[in-house]
Length: 192
Image (cartoon, rainbow, N blue to C red):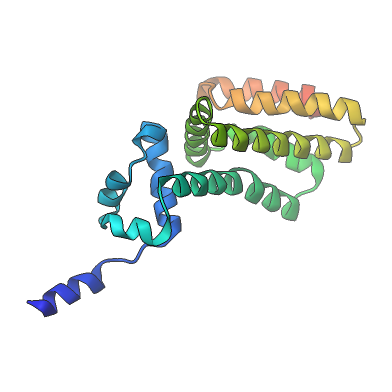
């Protein structure tokens, strides 16, 4: 009997903190921050709560890790990827088209919305949102300056571009092509 018990323990996959964070972000998307419960996440992952406490001191530590993971994936990693592969104008076009890039963009938008709703009543989430919003608008302004736009104009266009990207996530798919083309023309002078 003990042998089977040991085999079961060995067959149970070991989870790292990233698995918990990913599952917590899925719960956030589906149920809001109040739905991010250690017991539910453990059940969904097929593990005990003890696994959670191996990686996190408490629920607040998980919340902090969720915000950091979201910040890294939704902003810093994207910027690194764009900077590595594309010239400034193509980076801008890629960013403007991001809300319409398919299922992964839809899922990222859903997590973003959940974090924004969380930030309405949580100071830590609000601070993370403000930091991310600033990083994103500064990055867009930097790209515009690299394309020859003046400092003042780049800042104004960056704010508009970022607002468009956030609202673009809410547009119905069929509406997107006309809106994308119009915004590209107005914000960076792209031609169809």
